[in-house]
Length: 338
Ligand SMILES: Nc1ncnc2c1ncn2[C@@H]1O[C@H](COP(=O)(O)OP(=O)(O)OP(=O)(O)O)[C@@H](O)[C@H]1O
Ligand SMILES: [Mg+2]
Image (cartoon, rainbow, N blue to C red; front, side, top):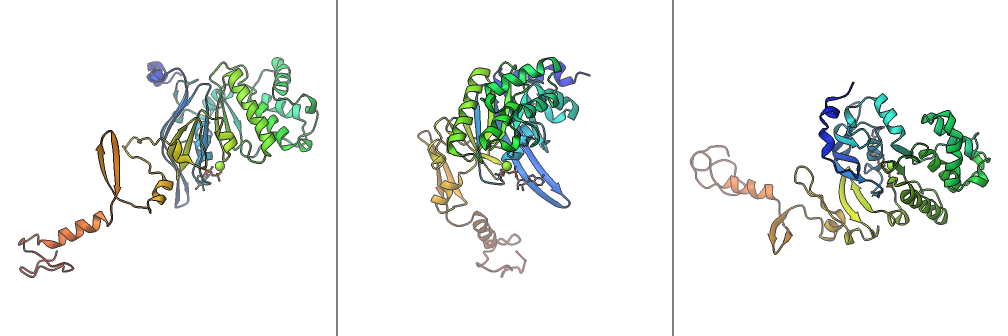
């Protein structure tokens, strides 16, 4: 059955180059009576043929966001639009998503999960089989992928005898089993793909990403802690405590994020304050805000807004209007409680 949204094409308004759009997504994990807010109103768009990186401290929500984009984890609130379905996937069944994911999204997980007793070629072939690549084209496709990631010489080696870089190549080839023939819209999601690789091997993997990005038009969404990885991104997002706390265009320096950071209002007109700047200013919590000469000006305020209001309230009696001395809570004129 075709959903109403598809019939009406409510999502036709997206520009053609949007591959995935995440809109005001919240994710709350519930375990017995404990709630963890992993994402708190995240919005972003992944564009065709672009590389987006994600940086942020441990526990900030990077893996959760990656899995929500890939449709593996359901958002608690918010929308996730996939260009291939032209719809919001948070309302779709697991069956529809599994089918749609096959020719749209490839995953490279934080820990690459190759089968140790199979060789490099067999691991990619198994991934192709699971992804539903038809039997008659599977062998040819696996050969092509093995060549593409530069593993021809090592394809008969068991996974246990491959180096970290070679295992990553197998994982990349496996992620591409269905994307290699997708013109443009394919997306590869990677959770710290170079985390346990030495810098030289990591560089080679990154060059491979770049090549795939340029030759196949594949988009990449890469979680990373590495400057090396972030350097090749078209856009990098900073994530902190489940919110996107900054966007960066090309030329990001992870040690000096303030240099390229752009902050964006969320749907409720809230602006994330960069914690590094707050620390520099002595962690103020209140500001006077004004707009002059095309600039917003935030002036840190001393004291506490609530306390100021409290003091003012305590000064006049609600019943007789007499002044009440500071620190007193009973009106000396009429005896009312303040
Ligand atoms: N299945 C789950 N159940 C409950 N809480 C979870 C679950 N998965 C993640 N969390 C919590 O959600 C928050 C975000 O976790 P997430 O794994 O997305 O962080 P991360 O940025 O990927 O961290 P890291 O850099 O360490 O991989 C954390 O507080 C984590 O403990
Ligand atoms: Mg993670």
